[in-house]
Image 1 (cartoon, helix red, strand yellow):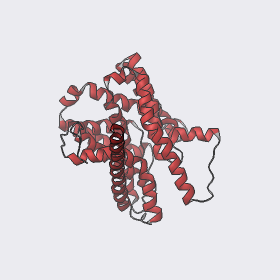
Image 2 (image 1 turned 90 degrees about the horizontal axis):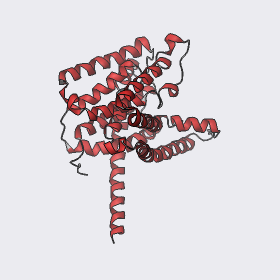
Image 3 (image 1 turned 30 degrees about the vertical axis):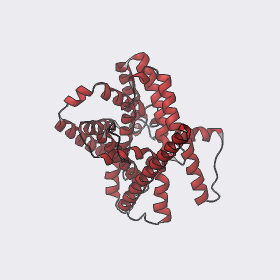
Image 4 (image 1 turned 135 degrees about the vertical axis):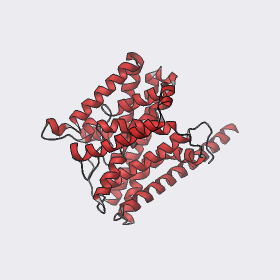
Amino acid sequence: MPSKTSRNASLDALRVLSLLGIITLHVAGGGFHDNRPLGFVLDELSRFAVPVFFILSAYFWKPDELAAPGLLVLRVLGRVGIPFVAWVAITYAWQAINRPGSAIDLSPTNLALVAWTGGRAFHLWFLPALIVGTAIVAFCGRYLGWRATAGLSLILFLLGATVGSYARFWLDHGYPFWVDRNGVFFAPVFLVAGVLLRQHADWAGAVPLPAIMAATVLFALGQLAEGYFVVHRYPLGHDYSLSTLGYGISVALLFMRLDLRWPLWSTLGRATFSAYLAHLIILSVIVDKLKLGENSLLVIALTFAASLAAGVAWQWAWGAIRRRSSAITAK
C-alpha cells in the first residue's frame, strides 16, 4: 500500500505513537502488577495521546466546513458514529461469548450512559466526546469567533479540572471520569488548539524547536508530578489536569515541526483508527486467551503490533472492496 503523497508523514507518525500511548495506558490501567512504578510512569507519559487525537481531528477541518458547522458535525457524526455503535455491539457480544451469563442492562438510563461512555467498550468514549466537542467548537467558532471560542474552551477545561482531577481539594470525594472528561469539558480546548495551529501555522513554525522540546519535557514532568502528588492516582495515571493541556499541545507542535518522509508512516497512520477500534479485544485475547499478562511490556508490544496489523489488513481489504465496486459500477 504505497503512501499518498498528500499525506503528512510526520503527523501520521504522531498518530502511530499516540496509538501506542493509548494501548500502554490501557495495559497500565489493568494493573501492571509486574512493575507498578514503571506502569505509573508509562501511564502518565502516555497521556498526551488522546489530546493529540483531538488536536489532529480539528487540524484537518477545512475552511468551508468551519463555515458550515452543521455540516461539519454531520460529517464527524457519520464518520465515527457508525463505528462507535458497531464496536460497542462487537465488544458486548465478545464479552457475552467469553463470560456466559453476564447480564446486559438495557434500561434507558444505562443505554444513555453507554452512548456517552462506551460502557464496556470504555476505550470508545473518545468518539462521542469528539462529536459533542465538535458541535460546541464548530458552532461557537462560527458565531462567536475563534478568540471567544478559545476563551470559552479554556474556561470549560478549567471547570472540568476543578470538579474532576482537583475535586479532592474542594470536596471529600471525586466524580466518575465521564462527568468531567467526556465531551463538554475536555474535548473543546484541544479541538480549538487544532484549528488555531492550522490557522496560525506560520506562528507555530516560528517557535524555536528547542523551546518546544523543553516545553514537552517540562509538561511531561508536570504530568508525572500532578499524578503522584496532586491527583493521587498512583499506581494509575490521570488524563486531565493543567499539565495535560500543555503536554498534548507541545507534543503535537513538536511533530508538526518534524519533516518525516518515510512512506510507511502514512500507511500505518491510515490504519490507526481501525487499530484503535479493535485493540481492546486484541488486548483481551493476549491477556486472557494467551495468558501473557504477567509481562506487561510484552503485552504492550504484542497488542500494538497486532492492532496495527489488523488495521492495515482492514485498510487493504476495504480498499480492494471499493476498487471492485468501482469497477463493477463502471461496467
